[in-house]
Image 1: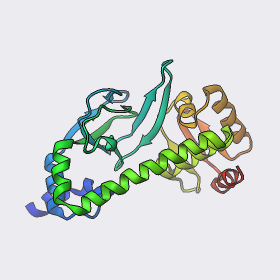
Image 2: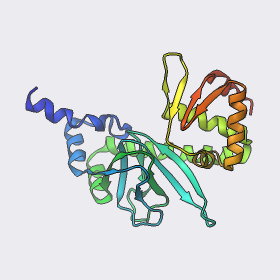
Image 3: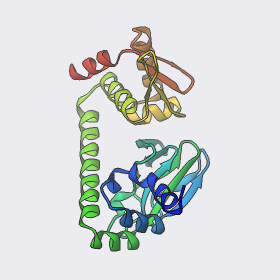
Image 4: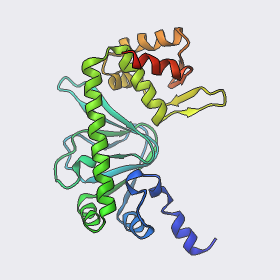
Length: 236
């Protein structure tokens, strides 16, 4: 393999990040050169809510959870992120503190581009600017949908919605057709995603398991009947 191929290969990870997908190689190289790469062990804090915001982050490998802490100390998980997903994008073009905390769910590699560098890149590239606007718009839609689910849906519907979303974002299909979600999340973490108590989400999962719609052991959840879960959500 020649040197040119090696240089191209080192940029491949950026092509898996949607906001960088359609950028030419020369722009990808600039982004790569401006990226600060950090590695975190399981449970390590990437940044804390209220810390001075450094910049735009993306998951190169591993998984990251973004959460907020209520006044009484309870954690509320906003989202679980996998490789290729971005976070802290709300800090783009402003110098506000981080609005949430980010924690590595498993050993993870995270890339960060400082705001001052990202602003210069955006000014020189309309495609990147448009991709970032789309990403912010998608995150707003996600937030609005989550608020709607909390307001209008019962615990069963919210649990089903979270399971379906995790199956799409983090799941992989086994040879049997079953979708397995292998996330190192506690029942408390899952309850936080659903917006309920650990006891309630445990009862809800047990009910779905009893009806042979899902199965679980340890941190693995297997979706046995995706069609039925989808139907349950559509009826809510």
